[in-house]
Length: 261
Length: 113
Image 1 (cartoon, one colour):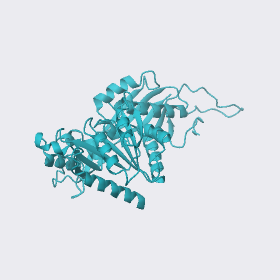
Image 2 (image 1 turned 90 degrees about the vertical axis):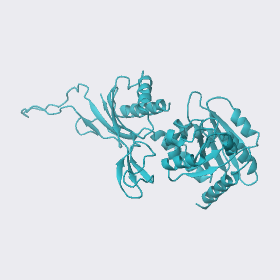
Image 3 (image 1 turned 30 degrees about the vertical axis):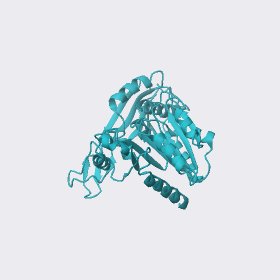
Image 4 (image 1 turned 90 degrees about the horizontal axis):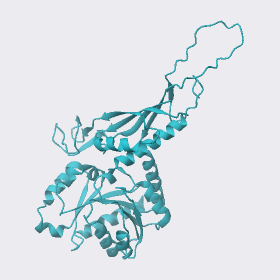
């Protein structure tokens, strides 16, 4: 209760009043009350709340669910066309006998990617964001409620192809994996630094095309490390299979760590 | 254009807080936005104008505290202002830096009546 006029305050927000509650001095000869109208006083509410707290709260809820069920959740982010779905298709087929998988696909429209994943025999849910440019933790929460991924599995969340907006939205994932292909510019980490800063692994895809494109692989690595010195970097080709062993080793290692912790 | 989603989150927080304070009007809203929070201010202004229409924030004055980003060098401990993630430490030239300020994105206060 506010001591001045008795309005409600809540536990997290302190409320102060601008209104002047001084009373002119007067004799206390008779019984009287101090009721008086408040001319809609202006009130300051101290909020101090993170704008994304609702998203972050639900992300933590997802994270708790993943931890309890020992699910390794990975958020795959990239620009459109870098090969996220191809990398998944290949991974799901190659590791079919070693790990259990589930996939959440995020796209503005169509179930094309979910259809491709479904064809590998993997459990998949498609989220269509409509006009939305990123997945958020609320969408993932609902997808999880529908799909109920198995315990001790790996869940790939393929985000909407966009190197900007998904960077701000925690989905509850364990690791964020950014994918870039050699047909893009080698200055991409500098142009879209938020995504490279917030990721833990960077996969450079389509390296079989290196002889045909002016892409300097050392330069892209240097640029990525300038933005995020902790970033791990792998080079792969989903077409030839080159480098995929290292990706699979990374994945297996994360699964083992998750089982041990 | 994630700024619109962020504006919608701000409206939700403001609405909740105003309801809690038994207020029907929000006169002013104060926000902290860090220069490395991922918000593009021109996109923000556009999203704000569209987003607050017909909401409790429609006529509110929005006061934005822009917070300049700072980093600390993990190698030599120097603290310095930073504009880009790839800026090196001005003292030792290393990229081993941690951002210590500038990622803020929060609703600081409201003036309601």
